[in-house]
Amino acid sequence: MTDSVLRVEDLGVSYGASEAVRKLDFDIKRGEFVAILGPSGCGKSSMLNVISGLNAPSRGRVWVEGAKLFTAASKAPRLGYVFQSHRLLPWRTVRQNLEIALAASSVPKAEWEAKIDEILGILHIRQFKDAWPMRLSGGQRQRVSIARALVVDPSYILMDEPLSTLDEVTARSLRQELTGIVQRTGVTVIFVTHSIREAVFLADRILILSRGPARLHEDFTVPLSRPRNYDDPRISEIEGQIIAGVQAPWGLGGQRDVA
Amino acid sequence: MLLLIPLWYLAAAQATFIEPPHAVLAALPHFLSDPATWSNIGLTMARVVAGLSLGIVAGFVAAFVMSRSRFMGEVLGWYVIAALRTPSAIAAILALAIFKGSEAGYVLVVAFITFPYMAMGMRDGLNSADRELDEMSRIYHLGLLAQVRHVWAPFVAPYIFSALRNAHALAWKVIVVAEIFGAARAGFGAKFEHAWEYMVMIEVHLWLLVFMAIVLIAEYGLIRTLEKYTFRWRKEA
Ligand SMILES: Nc1ncnc2c1ncn2[C@@H]1O[C@H](COP(=O)(O)OP(=O)(O)OP(=O)(O)O)[C@@H](O)[C@H]1O
Ligand SMILES: [Mg+2]
Image (cartoon, rainbow over all chains, first blue to last red; front, side, top):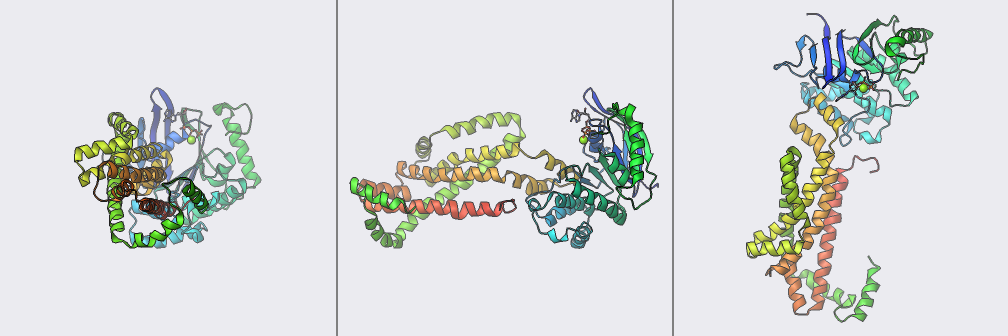
């Protein structure tokens, strides 16, 4: 056994004649924080739909903790997912939203209460345990969404631009906290973003994809120790390197905004 | 509401068939303490509740089948439209002719008139189901039961409530029509018709008043309260 949590080999995704993902190979280890960067429409969501177990790929193989996905006998992986929008059930309280996810996972009922308290505590939202999601702020809702992803003891958590709908102040504090949460829980995270700076700040490793159909352009290890500071000039430096490196493959005309 | 009282006086002074409010009010205690009043109202209410329940269940089944299969959707869609467009008086006469004034006839008239409202409302709800929440349910492995309970049912609830309000109002109207046409021996419609035929105008007024009160209580006391409770999670609540 390796400590590989997710392994993808020769992954291809097509919709009819149009190809969204051409050929992806990567391996993600337990506890790693991996960011995925790619130009808009290159096939990131298509890839996430495969590694979340939602859609079978057109080609290639996927293993989660050594077990092959999309075979007749395979079970869908246990994972957390933080979407761009919170996707909480608005008619259930914070606690109920977490309980519904727990009930569908194999965590024994006797452990729920303690688990929920612990996770809500880590995210500083324990006082909202019995609140309705619609009465919370956008940042608080996204915290609940992260709590739901953590509470099920996932093999890994997928995050698809989870901070992109928040205002910058809220996004900053949640981004900062996310690094602490990941360290405390040791959870494996796959984080899709359009912000190169965010990727450099958060990730141990960045998978840089090509323009669509997606291939792996570069597997980039972030050469920074933790804790990191979002305003660290070294982050800007690395950001600049990455931008310079993707000019050609992303077909950028020199502009910085990759989103 | 209170504004209606002067209007009522005015009308009573003009028209021969309208009694002044104080005369009606004076007769009210006796009317309300008569057990026969309540047994008649109870009977009509039982018909409405039975018919409406049947209509709701039939509507749900129809909506579910329509949302599952295109073909059945087309076929049932026609039935629903036809039922929706049938004037309630005609439905009442037909059902009573078929069931010859038996209890089933009254219940079925109400069910037939209310079911298309429930079917349409629920179908619209199911059709607009939230793709994002469905995806979330699949990611977190919610079973079918959990999905129905936590995702679909709350999602279609607003559609169901607005359909239910229509269906409920219609149920009371059609049952009275049916009781009158069906020459029922008991029930609100029968008593109302009887009083009208014998020109006991005070009693006509009393029946009308009590009827309106009951419909309003059912709507505001029951349906709206239930609605408020169901939607307590909403932001404005
Ligand atoms: N269900 C689908 N059917 C057909 N084509 C699709 C479907 N989903 C995505 N595509 C196409 O596949 C390509 C990749 O889309 P995808 O959503 O995976 O990109 P993305 O990298 O997530 O984009 P963004 O950064 O804008 O979120 C696009 O050209 C898109 O139009
Ligand atoms: Mg996307």
